[in-house]
Amino acid sequence: MTAREDFIARFGGVFEHSPFIAERAYDSGMIFVPLTAKGVHEAMVSVFRQASREERLGVLRAHPDLAGKLAIAGELTEDSRNEQAGAGLDRLTPQEHARFTELNTAYTEKFGFPFIIAVKGLDKHEILEAFERRIHNSPEQEFETAAAQVERIASLRLAALLPEG
Image (tube, rainbow, N blue to C red; front, side, top):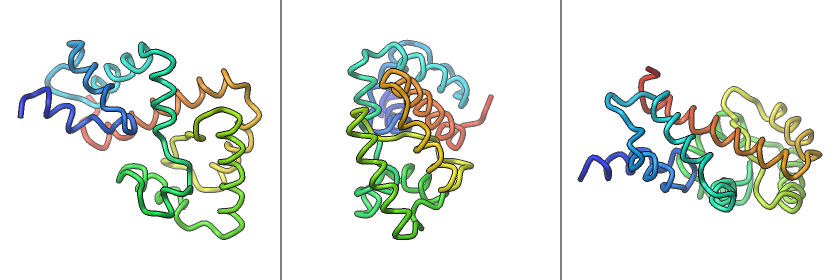
């Protein structure tokens, strides 16, 4: 396996189901050894921000609904499953699950992508509060908020894989 292939295999999932971010970061020459969470994050965020709006929208759409169908079916990526479980989203009451489902549907209909929030350090109540607040944002405001959350999720995932440096 080449260094490029190894990098993509290791970091291609940092931006949910969007290995093109890792590919472009590596190909751009912005990746330096020794790898650090900060350095790799900066390179990948630069690629994400330079991607076309359609590509960025694709990254947003690659994220699963919180406590949604994929979670119930056990089809989340390992990172997403661990993140949602850490926030207690795998242990919702029937009423909480119904509220998340209702909000997921309304949010996706309004914005065209799922609600995205970096759940690490948050509990289900804080996530629900953010959901209920953000659903009132304008489409452009929410696109930027969701993109910022994607970048935060990537940072947290990289911090788990690499030294901070």
